Amino acid sequence: RRGRSADALTALRRAVALDPGLGEAQNRLGVQLLNEGHLREGHGHLARAIEALPEEWGPRVHFAQACALLGEWDAAGEALTAAEQRGAEASVLAERFFRDVPDAD
Image (cartoon, rainbow, N blue to C red; front, side, top):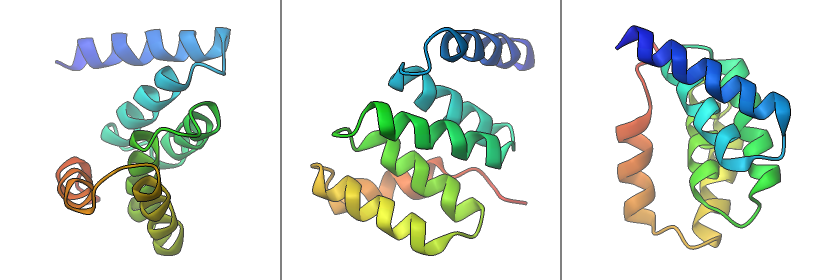
């Protein structure tokens, strides 16, 4: 599992280096970095995913997770509100948000 994770990180880093506008790659890289405990770096990639995919709600949920893990609660709330405004249902947001947030310990 660890080797596959490292391979995925390498491939995603390469993809966004070649084209920083690849929103889904930025999103996946950000989520992977959160899962690996690289919160600030993941936060940055998720912010770039939002820039590249302004109408998508998924990256905003992941960005909210990063903000929450960093203790940036106002920004997390704003990102969740923005996700809801783009079509995410509140019940889905709550389920995904709490399911996908890795332990901050």
